[in-house]
Length: 200
Ligand code: ADP
Image (tube, rainbow, N blue to C red; front, side, top):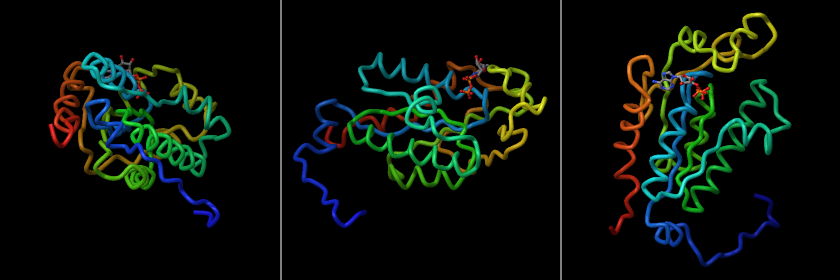
């Protein structure tokens, strides 16, 4: 930290904000290939949490790559910077008392480890949306795989750029075997105890 930056001692803490909201806050991080189902599942999880009165916010390619990260490409260095900034934004949201959902390919293990250290292990729930490349390519939701195969897109994860699968995710979802509803239930069952405040 720059030696001239002296943090101000704010009197309202994260715990105060969580008490006001009546639930804990943490980060749900969805990782997996493009088209694996990250945003589809995150979207339904957020709707369910909203229905339960939980304060949420979703970060995804649309509101990040078009805004704060509009200067970044898909080169390995920029992908790392992309995830670093998202981790810092997510950390602020979690500090604000918000259950934050983030759906990003995030192909590098070291970048995901870095998110964990930014938001702290206890606030980080890694959800591996495990869908085979064949299935993602068959779905080709955004037509990106077709373009990548035609050589129109460089650095396409799974085709011309690597995806390092999580070894010990908190939750793993195989979308070729389970429905969206089942996946959402699996996630909600996992996070329900985490939502509780310590003294309640
Ligand atoms: P990503 O956010 O990972 O790029 P999307 O959520 O945009 O992927 O797209 C996933 C596609 O796969 C959607 O069209 C969705 O309807 C479909 N799909 C089929 N089965 C499942 C499943 N079990 N879970 C999630 N998505 C599924």
